[in-house]
Amino acid sequence: MIKDQLQEIRNRIKEAALRVGRDEEEVTLIAVSKTYSVEAIEEAMIEGCRDFGENQVQELIGKIDAIPKDVNWHLIGHLQTNKVKYIIGKTALIHSVDSLKLAEEIEKQSAKKNQITSILVEVNVAEEASKYGFKCEEVVEVMKKLNTMSHIKVEGLMTVAPFVEDAEENRPIFRKLYELSVDIQKQKLDNISNTILSMGMSNDYEIAIEEGATMIRLGTAIFGNRDYGKKN
Ligand SMILES: *Cc1c(COP(=O)(O)O)cnc(C)c1O
Image 1 (cartoon, rainbow, N blue to C red):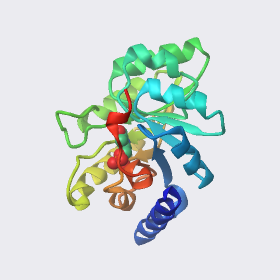
Image 2 (image 1 turned 45 degrees about the vertical axis):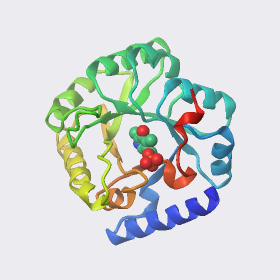
Image 3 (image 1 turned 90 degrees about the vertical axis):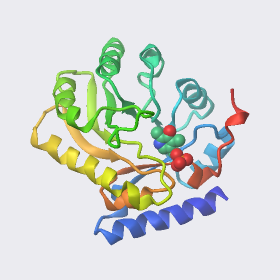
Image 4 (image 1 turned 30 degrees about the vertical axis):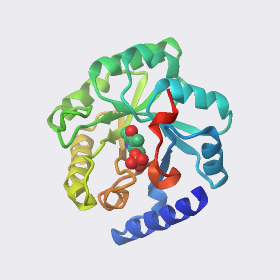
């Protein structure tokens, strides 16, 4: 089943990319494995997945220990500053840097471990009260500050778009994040590579790809519906 879902998703990624003259290779599929079992992750690995996303530190660390293989782990959920020390050196990318305080803690803990930690800056493009992230108009100033932190490497931007019935409704959100990344590029900040746009989830990833996503984060589309009752 995971196999069939992945095949279908990869076809759709390819078609969405083709529609706007992009190459499917530009889009990294992150399998969001939060709440799913180690067995499900292993099944996805057999089908070629090497990038997995988790939104909780404890679950992430548990899975890293259970799956001692060549896997890129992405932290995609809100990160509390007091938990930063547990994950430095373990993630390929932290997608959810949503405050300067958090960035400073990542800088501090990374310096301690002599690491450079790759991050994305989370932007609350839709300005939903329930969501984390900077406002669009704050991001350029934030980038200038992050540019001075030598143990952080800013690789780009991330957003969690609203849940909508019709994925088309999120097109302006994705377009706005893309435009913001162009604005940041113009600043020519030397520590900011800004090539990644992490946007698009199970219900709207094709639209996100059409609008420039380079990372999409899919959970239910790959693994089926989540059972939150099973854990904790
Ligand atoms: C859970 C989650 C996803 C995946 O959501 P699906 O709708 O299952 O694809 C993507 N991004 C973030 C930040 C998440 O927390």
